[in-house]
Length: 195
Image 1 (cartoon, rainbow, N blue to C red):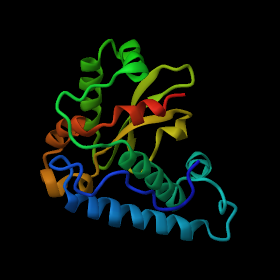
Image 2: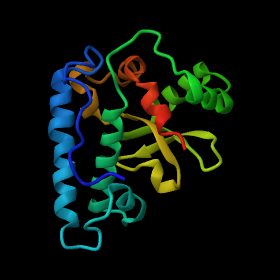
Image 3: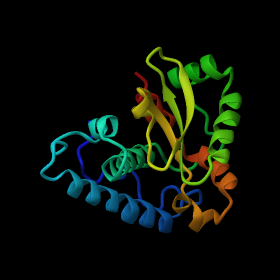
Image 4: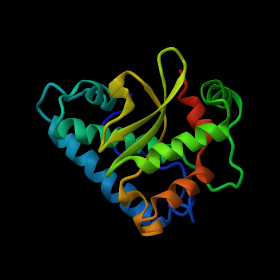
């Protein structure tokens, strides 16, 4: 369970280049996420939500600023934790590959469906690979700061398609950002999120 605090990066701010530049990390992680954490901390102060985990707030808070900021804190914490230095032909193995193959038939099928979801999400939001309670995987599109946890799903891999996540590196080319992102997924971290 995540406390309302700034998560630590497990890599240097230059580690994801050229997929995600140091400049983007400095703004996206250092400014955007920090603002969500600070705002959430101030919103829960002296309320029934003070002392609750970020996940509990995401699951139970009514729509509005509290939910929006908690969702963005959780989304970004999961997002920044799931990456590592770029690697060509970066493919999952083990249990996560088995689960992907079981649900989607192949990694290529999953990749195509996930890319389609991330590409066609209108406006700002997130594409997620999540696990249902029965163990099956599902791809969802979440508007703004929503998270699959809200639907009783376990979020495994999320891609931020808000423009601040890629604009400095790819301008308006969301599709190119999505394609490049496959090179930096840390599939071991994604697998560790399986229930």
